[in-house]
Image (cartoon, rainbow, N blue to C red; front, side, top):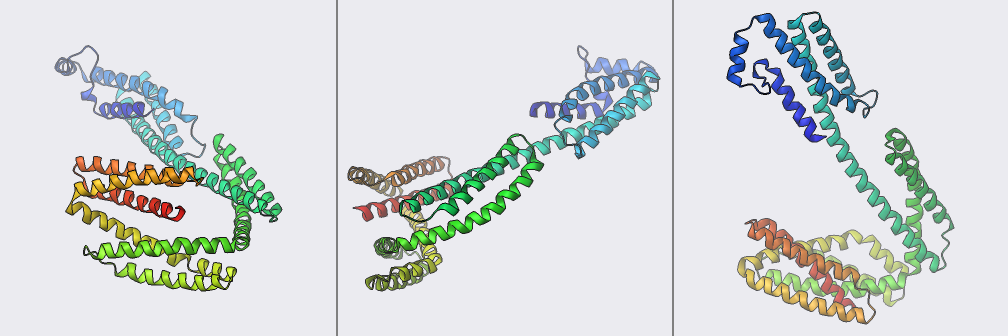
Length: 394
């Protein structure tokens, strides 16, 4: 449809200036000379006939768009005006009023042009909306999968999941109705049915939050022990990263401040764990979630600056180090996998890191070093996470 729209718009633009018409099999100079040699009435008749002929072609294509429009569409209003002017132009031509026919033909073309432009813009908006909806559907499906997995885990640990299971099924069924509405392009019904989903999802969100809390406290000792082990290694890793960055002139003030906060949280959780106050220790972790997340963001920022410094100093050496680390990580993950450790996520991260390196190299060849640095920084961050995973499970 796109080529038709642009072709028609060019046709309209060309038709607005009558003397610019090109008749098949005629030379432009000869045509102009012919037009000059005929009287005004004949000249107007030729132009009027040409315009009406083009209006018929445009109308036959635009007519197919009418069925795709809602009744209250502004495009439909412009289409009706175009059709009225076209019919009027044809009547005037048949009555021999060629001058008036030309004027009304041009008016019809003006409104046809509006129809085509608005239809093109509407189609672009529709495509954008469709992409947004598709993204929302994918996120909702991911949300459902996460809840389903959590329900299964909770059920296997003897927790009562009857209420959340019922709410979950009702929400899924309601959402399925919305998807059917969208498939049928019944957008008004989809909006109404979506309100039902939103209400049910509010209830599901609350029940899911309660289940996660119940599940977390039932496994508080495991979660706290895992936190202590992971955070101890993270603190050690952070200290090494900060020292490395400081040695190369990178400002680490923010990272050091956040590290001190994390160490304080770690010590508090450790003290409670030693007294086997697992629920209290878990509450400390939950209450400081934002601080812990911020600490990781700060470390990632340091990694990105380290990448830039390494690239400036010795790019070939930097790439050699990356390649060596990747080979070691691949071997280490293979060994962990043989021991029964689930390494799928780490393997995916390592593959993604390799892809980021490849993209960075391509951007360097295209002389886009700043964009390349971003991809190298992402790769380094992913590799750091993989190596943390390897250390944790070794």
